[in-house]
Image (cartoon, rainbow, N blue to C red):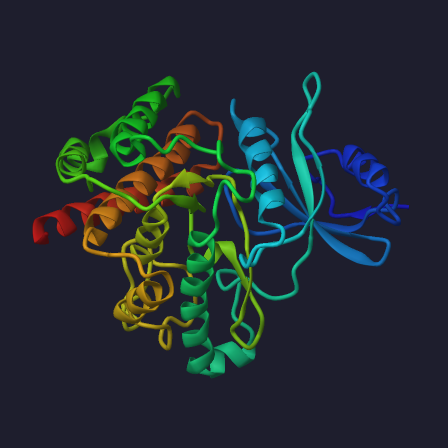
Length: 349
């Protein structure tokens, strides 16, 4: 017997088959399957079987051309993190060979705790010191990831390190250009002077980097906390690769509220007061990693540039009728704000 949320966008039979082949008890009796709020790129579904809770990550009903490739990389990354100090969900089973017309997907153990963008439990709402601990925990988790030796965990070929920073502008500029394939997209004009941001990044690109594993989309929406503020797990590793870990630091700082004041793409969390200041976050990261942060403004501009162009992709898909229109419009507004913020950082640099 299977009890699931009605109108799920995927068939759970292949999930049951995978779990059964992995020896998971009760694999044929998936219960309480329900979609989780979260990413716009993949289906995230929580369910129970055999008295335990699990989480499935699966391509969307209308997969992107690279959906299977990206999820297969994610499976490899999560597998490699086993045994490290990086908090992450345990991998239970994965299908990395989709076969004809199939999908790559994986199942991980559910992590007890809460996602701050979904809602803060009463103890966290009532006690600012818990929210402060959460912010510092994000820095500790990022420092743990920066300490991972890619070669030692089998990820030596997980990304191309040569010219990593130099390639970023061209990589994301081409992504923006590719949206012209979506009929009905209004084009990049509403984003302002994107080329100016790209030119500045190319001109002031750091000459050296200390490489490592990067998450690629590091923010509180991709974290799970316990009610005492401890970071339980970092999730959504779809954009992970090898490169400069300061990319992740720049990403979280552009969304971080400083003294409760929101940023253009501030994390959607209520309440914002109590969280560490930007200066505290930077100090914590520097103390935990020993990394030089002289080029931090460059990484913040890159984060605005990259995230803004990625979000505009959802807008383009929405204008072509391939994604929710309201979501596309909301993300477009965020893209505009991010690129405006990038230009402000440049003006003050």
